[in-house]
Length: 64
Image (cartoon, rainbow, N blue to C red):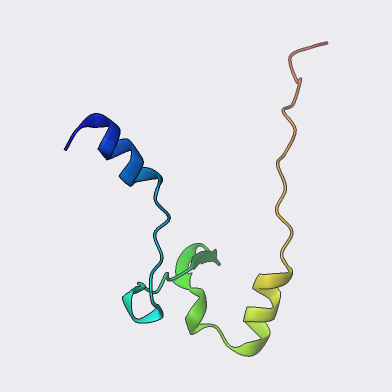
């Protein structure tokens, strides 16, 4: 296989059937330890999906 053939093959769209897929398990940190979201009850799953993600701004604590 030439480099051009390899590049062309890499650009091909991969289509998987549902039975060929691998289930992705989502874990999250709860009360200091990690747990899979699949093991949560209905209320805890609702809380998980309502979470807001944010990026904290850097503190300029040394500028006085």
